[in-house]
Structures are given as structure tokens and as C-alpha cells.
Length: 99
Image 1 (cartoon, rainbow, N blue to C red):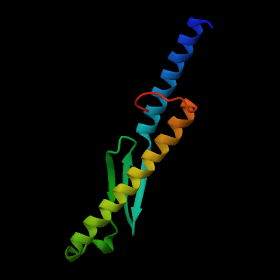
Image 2 (cartoon, rainbow, N blue to C red):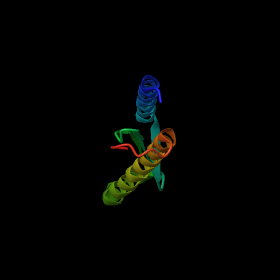
Image 3 (cartoon, rainbow, N blue to C red):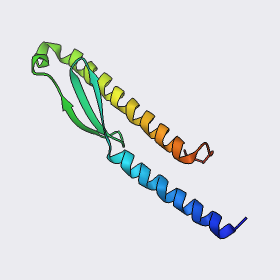
């Protein structure tokens, strides 16, 4: 086994994983609950919240907060699943620490 070739492959894999992580971090994920839409990036940072005009009644504030929470969690779940799927495919079943 050529150690130099193995090191080159490891370095390429490391760069490929870093590139994929950057791509995933820049991806916008959208979660939705009863018309409320939340957009986050791959780092789970909320980017935008869209609330339908008919839901702006002040009496519905608690319900609206709950809907925003549900939508946020929906978007976070989609981001985590996408990251796990893509990084899992890239490592082809290798057990790497922290992955």
C-alpha cells in the first residue's frame, strides 16, 4: 500500500467533506405549519418567518407562537436529515469520529 497515495486520498476526502458541509450550511430549508413558514440555513439559523395576514389577530398570539415553534422544528429536522444523508453517502459507511 502506497502511504503517499493514501494520504492524498484522505486529504481529498477531507476537502470534499468540507465543501459539502459549506454547501449544506448555505442551503435554505423551509418548514411549514398551518400556513406559517419558517426558513433557516443549514446551520439552523432562522432566516425568515412568514405569517399569513389572517393570523395576525392579537388574541391568537399564543397559538401563533406555537405554530412558529412547530415550523422551526420542522425546518431543523429537514436540515439535519439532509446533512446526515449527504455526509453519510460521502463517507460510504466509514465510521469517522464526529460524523
